[in-house]
Length: 372
Image (tube, rainbow, N blue to C red; front, side, top):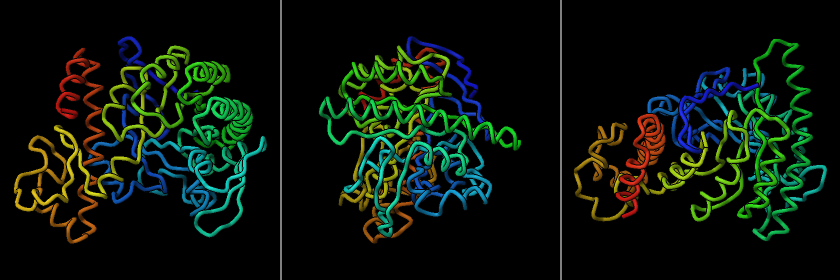
């Protein structure tokens, strides 16, 4: 069983440490979205330098290329990518069910590769097998994303997610037993709570997921800040307190991080910060800016005076504006370093504020300045 120590509690919010075979994660923590075993535009050394504690890769994308067998042969995700720290894998369900021609049955999902059109199948069993070969410390169970936010669609997707969870748990246990006999490191399974915006479905999913006694929980589904606090309160008041909870795909908007942490989530991941960076949209303590705007052409000040990332320490807004205007690859690199650093450090400061009982003050000051 995955070891999770809680150091301090404040209602639903908590500060803790997740212990994995590749190292500890001090929570709350933002996990780098390394979809294809890389965070776009960044090296793993840059991720370490900006303070990231863990990465999350995507099983769907890694099944397509380079394939789980190759990653296993290389020594697993952490070694293959030269990250050598704690790792997660998402099941890839979100990406598969976002494809246009996916066919879903009780057995699993049939779809075509977006790379070469090959016909492929993903089942709970094959997802577990792939994730064990990829070798992340923490796996997400294979879940279904509803095609709409209609109640009946959400209910059907949730019920199939529960049926698939049973099969994930069974396959995971079999693979764990084989790994134990072979003297291989442990790997851990998170159940995924679904139900969309409907709190009765969320409550039912949380109860069912908890009944399967996984190592932790992912909270999935597409949602916005509106209503998220109530949903997380519903879910996290049901999930066992002694197991970690990961808020899947959330963190593009800083408010999501505050809502998640104060309502009992321990880790977060999102591709948003680096995706926005590649388009010239950068976080600052006074809100996002578009560095491509003409007013930055002659602005020779750093992006943030009190930021210690590589961009802010060494370069000006004018220089970054120039790089974007001339379509230099370095623009995307520097902007991604800053945005990822900004989000990682924001969650680190949330952790510090929970430890020293200044969370409300920090949250109010941050949100007032950022969203003014």
